[in-house]
Image (tube, rainbow, N blue to C red; front, side, top):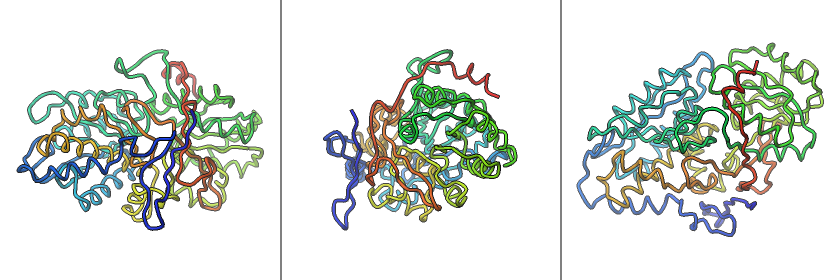
Length: 458
C-alpha cells in the first residue's frame, strides 16, 4: 500500500513533529522521543545515581563515534559523522542530558582500514557504553561487537548504533542497530554464497518516468572490496527495475578528472542516457565536468545517492545541474517542517551534511533507547545488557524525520528525490514539502552472490 509520511505545521509558531501515514496518527507509531524522555526525567531523582557500566558514571555517559576520516583515499570522508555526534551531545546536554546524565563523546578514526576499525571497537569496549553514529566502510572483523566484556566481566559485547554499516559483517553483527539499511538476511549469521538481498528501488521507478528506456553506466566505488560487493545487488536491482546497466565500472578515490574520459567513452559507445555513481560527490563532479569537456549529450538521468547531497556538490556550480539525488529523510531545505531536523540544522551552525544527518539520527535512537531503559527500570539500570535488549524492540522514526523503523535489521521503504539546479537542491518527488513517499513495492529482492559478481568488475 502506498502512503505518504507527512509532517505538517501545527500552527504558525509551533512545528508538528510526528508523522502521519496510512490513516495513522503519529502517536499511533509509538516512536516519539518525547514520551520516553519525560518518563526517564521523572525517574532521575528517585534514587542516587551510580556508576553502572563501562562508560557510565554517576554523572556521565561516554560513547564513541568511529568514522573513516584520515585516509589518503578520501581525506575527511565522514568527518560529518563525528561532528554531528559531538553536536548532538552539546544539544542533548543542554536539553536534560541522556539517561539522567551528561553525554561525553570519544572519537576514533577508522581510516578505511580494517585494523583501525577493529581497534576502534576494542577502544569503545574498554571505555564506552556504546558505539553511536559510526560510518566505517571496511569493518570485516566485528567479533568484539558481540563478545567484549561488560563491567561485570560477561562477554555481552557493546551496542552499536551505526549510521551506516557497509560491511556485511557489521550489518549482521547481533549488537548492531543500523540506521541506514540492512539488506541481508542476518537471521543465521553472516550469509555467504547465492542468496536473497533486499534493495531499495523507488528511485529507479521515478527515473523511468523521465524516460522508460534508460540504459547506461554504473560507477562502482572500487578501492575497497566491501564497496564493490555492496554495489552488485544495486546494479542487479536496476536491471530488474527496467534500467539496463550496460557496464559497471570501478572508480577510484585517487582518480583525476582525466581518468573519467574512460567512462564518458563507455557512455558514448553504448548510446547511454543514464549514469549512476555509487561513489561520492567528488566522483560525480568529475564525471559531469569530463562529460561536458568530451561533448557527451543525451543523458536523461544523472543519478547519485545522498553522497551527493553535500555543500561540496552545491558549490560545484552549473557543471552538476540536473543531477538527481535520493534519500530516506526529509531534506534540510524543509527544516521548518520537522522539529528534529531543525534541531540538527541549528546545532551544526546551519551547515548540515547528509552523513552527519544519519549520525544525528543514530544518536537520537541511542538516546531514545537509554531513556526507555531509565523510564522502565530506573536510572541505575543503564547497562550494556539492558541496552542491547531494548535495541531489539526499539521503535524509531527520528520524530518523523525518517520513515518508521520497528526492526533493527530492515530498512524503511520511504524516500524523497531531489534535483540540483543553480546551486540549490529542489524537491521533485513527492511534491509536498515535509513528506516522504512510502510504499512496500519500493523494496525489491534480488538473488546473487555479491562476492562472485564483484570478480567480474573491471
